[in-house]
Image 1 (cartoon, one colour):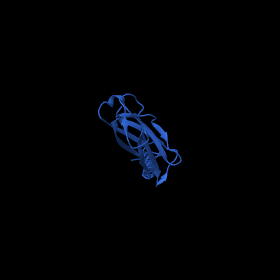
Image 2 (image 1 turned 180 degrees about the vertical axis):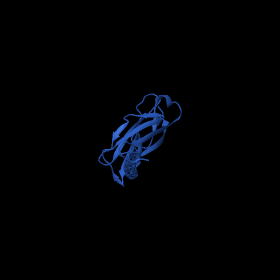
Image 3 (image 1 turned 120 degrees about the vertical axis):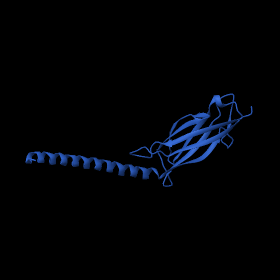
Image 4 (image 1 turned 90 degrees about the horizontal axis):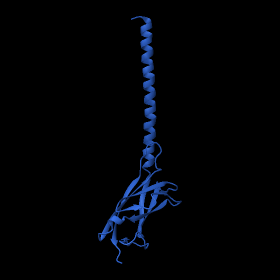
Length: 160
């Protein structure tokens, strides 16, 4: 093998290793950042504070006549046990109704309240099963790790 060919091969091997090292460094940085993001995500908690009906008590009713009956879900978002202000919570009615305003920002006390309205097509049985899915959009930086919760409700038909 001549000297020029050997030099060309060694340069190619050198470029390969430099590129491989660069890729490994970038992948390692991404992995470390993602791990940090996961650890940060694990500090959050989303807790149900209360569920109230239209009458602002624990009686959860639905009406077969109109859609003025509401259920209010009050939630608390914390990080390391302290309230988190300014995070965007998304609520989705998964069963039995819909959330009136699907995106709410937590207040200075870390609280947010969603309004759940029963769906008219589910109004005939004596009880109505509902479910709301809530997640925090803002609790991760690199990869989307969501703090998410499902909340079930049972409403009874209001006697006219």
